[in-house]
Length: 227
Image (cartoon, rainbow, N blue to C red; front, side):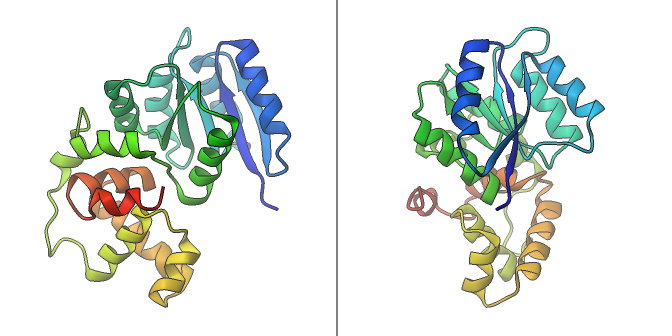
């Protein structure tokens, strides 16, 4: 079984240790490191490049370097690392800002353990996980301006197959599931996904979903059906 390698970043020690205790009970999750602030986190990543995590559970309010700034730095330097924003704040502006700077999901601290585990597994398997609240924020375009500016959706901009792959990505199908539905190989799906990333100037799957929603590639109702 492939393990999900994780880092927890939260300055509240008791809360962080509680999360670690829950996650360590999962056979498919391995905690690589616990950081008490963003600076400690980014320093660890710089000094341990051979031991990078798949996912960082990132608190937003931390000393020295907060979670928002740390997310910006990590998203630019290590785009393959997926970040789940973890916070007590559930305002639409906070959600929009974290998605804008590169978070793959947004989790409030009063979420249940089951919701947390679902989010982690979905982000690991599919690259993102947005609940209906986050999707509403993306659809409204609040403070997420880059994807509107980069390229307005054009019928000739993406190929028919790329559009099909993008639609399935937005509906949270895995690479293998997309391959089966389109009768192509997983490697071909990966190729189309890479082309989509290049054409839309997105750095990860989460960016593709934001692009697709805001450029009306796929109705948000179709995404909500998969949640």
